[in-house]
Image (cartoon, rainbow, N blue to C red):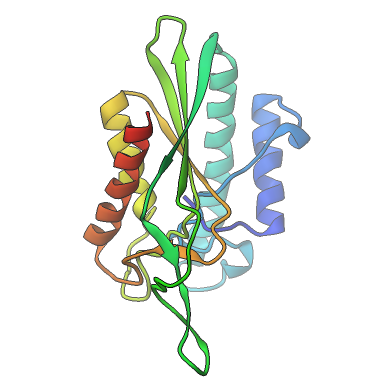
Length: 207
């Protein structure tokens, strides 16, 4: 649950994962939920208040990811993978021309891609191994009034899908362009959770 990582931080992360998991760096893909409620973990910010926590956090992140990759490679099993496609109205166009400038907010006059792609991964006995949810919508429910580190709507989406399937859920951010939540730029985490459940139920409906 990060928005972005800088080039140096990304390179260090891949290098650490590669060293621990024994997977070549060029075979490692790092994806971000792209939540805007995450801290900006740049090594160049280590001198700012609280910044002393960034280097050890990034180091632990690489070590944990590497250990998980190694564990996953050591427990591979045959699976069946099925893809499905559904719809979710959470995301709307967020650029509105007010006559003199573009302003950020819900613009109901422009259509957006509301496709939800869901991947169901099951073991040979039919039990779920994991679910992958792909949806294009900037995680910008929470904005300047929010003081929490948050996965935004993605957290509640994963929690709901995992609760109902009993298996891990991976969210993959789509090509969200200028798509944001219909209700966004607020400080209340309950709104982010409500948005996440909307997507979660759309994913479950597709499953």
